[in-house]
Image 1: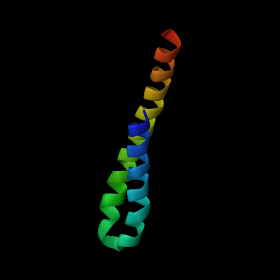
Image 2: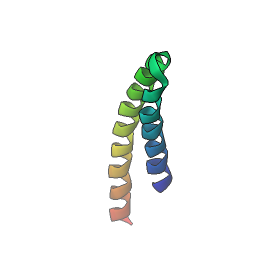
Image 3: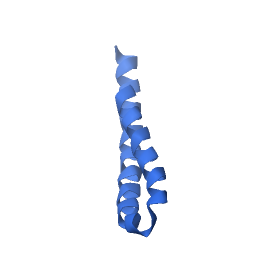
Image 4: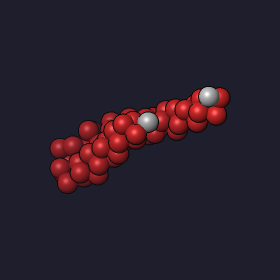
Length: 57
């Protein structure tokens, strides 16, 4: 779980850093933001499932 959260943080950092790239990375930022929104939802679901498994053990 820590590795997943760390990976998500790195994607967020990349998105923030790409703002400084100017107009050339507008498409990249749009795609990355879309991916990030989706990935955050999946990670929230995974955290919930991970928590449930922990309760069952």
